[in-house]
Length: 282
Image 1: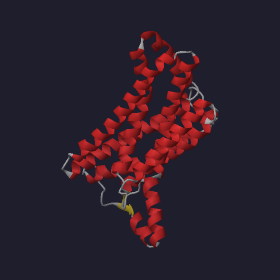
Image 2: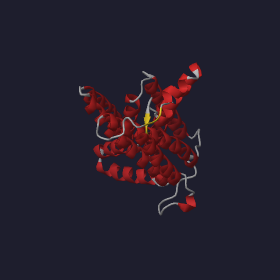
Image 3: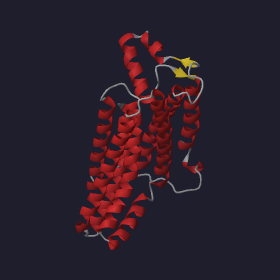
Image 4: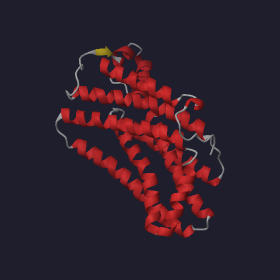
């Protein structure tokens, strides 16, 4: 639940920030008549994201062959990790300029008509929605906790909506740099587990070797601690996406992703690559 909550919160808040910026600009410029196309674009983006998640679920469910299912899941896991990694670094670099960029696009769309306004809102929210749908689908499909991952994601999205509304109304000031740093680091940990799980799926599909080269077995380790061990295993599986049996390849991939990506993400601002700085606050 925790990993999916973080995904829902992080991605949901980014989308909520985008929507609040667009609406605030229209209200500030006295163009309330343009709110309907913007909301239509937001609604279409949400509908597309939901349809994408449903399509993924139906497409994989139709695959009767176990190895094809594992191959599909493994490849989609790697794609999802790539998208989320790009997203956390992009948001870290673009937080300062996102408001001006969105307002500039919206100003141009106002002159082009309602369809252009809807397209701007659709594109701004749709990217976040598709990333969220893919990553949540991967985490949910890899879980055996029933509806718990979905509940976690919905709670994260609900929290993001509340925070977005408070930011829009001016009742909340959020230190965006700190927020996106902490949630970005947490998502990198979750993504490391997902990419490890993805490689494990590819091993089960027979694409990669080493399925029987076992590094350790979390299920066996936690079994000795009884009920407390069950809770610990559930927590580790939810956050780190640990499979009952972890192969050496899975462990190496987990470390090879987590260590350099986390180091690059947490490097001091003075050591960043050329680019735009991150906003300290909203």
